[in-house]
Length: 135
Image (cartoon, rainbow, N blue to C red; front, side):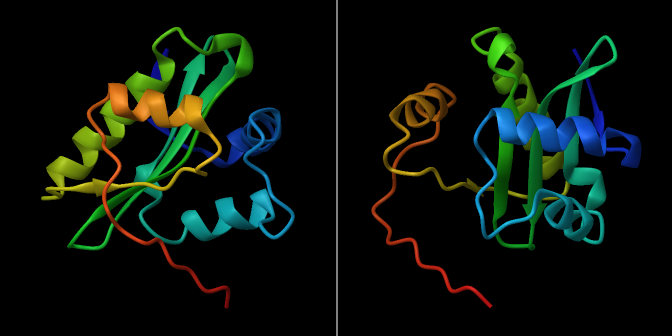
């Protein structure tokens, strides 16, 4: 797998991958999400390519205080092959190069398999309340 920054020609495959991985929710249009990310730290939107196929994605962000990971997706037929780990490691390396010392992420509480995946990468559940507000 080659990990590289997202390119506009990847859009169709990325959107399809996110649908396959059930990352798309009614209130977030994936094309709008991509467009917004391309305006802020586009170099931290990574795709993992196997052959000609986008098989994995991750978005990262850094605000000078904390790093964040979003939209980690691995094609269902490519899961459990180390692609997700590789994507996270690449995002971590890029965040660390920017001076980031801590990465946060959010996982739906019901998604226990993904929680276990992140725990295997050294992430831990922290005693925090996650709050949000739609604008």
